[in-house]
Amino acid sequence: MIVDTLAIVGPGLIGGSFSLALKQAGAVREVLGVGRNPARLTVARELGLIDRAVDWAEAGQADCILLALPVGETEAVLKLLAPHLKAGAIVTDAGSTKANVVAAARAALGARAADFVPGHPIAGSEQSGPGAARADLYQGKKVVLTPQADTRAAALATVRALWEAAGAQVEMLEAALHDRVFAAVSHLPHLAAFALVDELAQRADGDTFFRFAASGFRDFTRIAGSSPEMWRDIALANREALLTELDAYVAALQSLREAVAGEDAEALLTLFSRARNAREHWIETQD
Ligand SMILES: NC(=O)c1ccc[n+]([C@@H]2O[C@H](COP(=O)([O-])OP(=O)(O)OC[C@H]3O[C@@H](n4cnc5c(N)ncnc54)[C@H](O)[C@@H]3O)[C@@H](O)[C@H]2O)c1
Ligand SMILES: O=C(O)C(=O)C[C@]1(C(=O)O)C=C[C@@H](O)C=C1
Image (tube, rainbow, N blue to C red; front, side, top):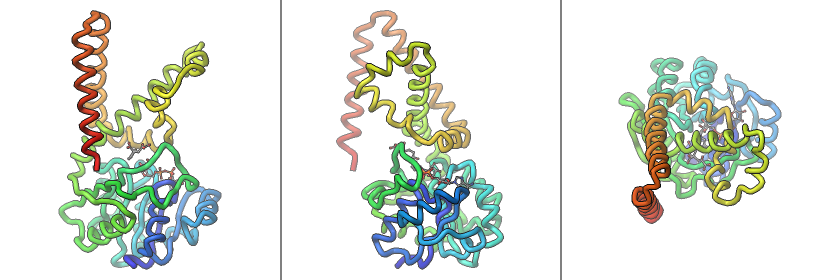
């Protein structure tokens, strides 16, 4: 047993999967759930993601509290929790952006921010809600923690142990670097997929195009099935890094456009070959 009681704020895909994995590993005795949607909390209890739905006061008495809700909600939720936090309680999160979450923890928790361990599991899917939770979601996947200079060592060690019990490999990154990296490899691809699907859907004759779209379109746009609320918050929270990546991608598309317009077969072949090699290398080096 790593912690006796764990409270999950927002037991959906990410929080629910954390709970299932820890229960399966025998790492936690009781899981409490807090949320804004009572019907979803009932589903979370029926699916065994949480043992009981509780209020903020009771959640604050848990040994560890995981925030697993859209990143834009972090500060407001921590402010609701702060007056109830018992001595020694550890707070952590699973948000896809880290600098804004660190700032929110400082603003809402004051000195207790030392008990906050910022985290991000690099695992998920386009599905959301309690019904999408799976005990094996984190098996063999990375989790990035972005501890601050004043993060309590014991809190960091406990959160690391919990993720490892859930099957994940823990890595540390500085929060700003985390946000730059994920702007490029996660946030930009989601925006590109949302943009492509929406652009086609807005056409008067869009149905004709969707009717013939096949596996290439399906693979490229799977992530456009993701939670709009979650991605609105990520785009706003990681605005600066995302703007840099959008500019780089637009420039890359622009040079591809020029190669197509100028019938520059050599440039197209060079770029496609380079990209294919890079992707093959990435796939081979995936652990
Ligand atoms: N989906 C992914 O692939 C993925 C991967 C890694 C990290 N994340 C991050 O994990 C977090 C949760 O994502 P998810 O996919 O589990 O979403 P989800 O929609 O499955 O679950 C989020 C839950 O939070 C609840 N919620 C929303 N606002 C709330 C509030 N103010 N108070 C209490 N509960 C509230 C919702 O009712 C919902 O049940 C997000 O920050 C997301 O960026 C997601
Ligand atoms: O597989 C997916 O559907 C995901 O979107 C997972 C994904 C990703 O971009 O890889 C999405 C957001 C997260 O913060 C972490 C993982």
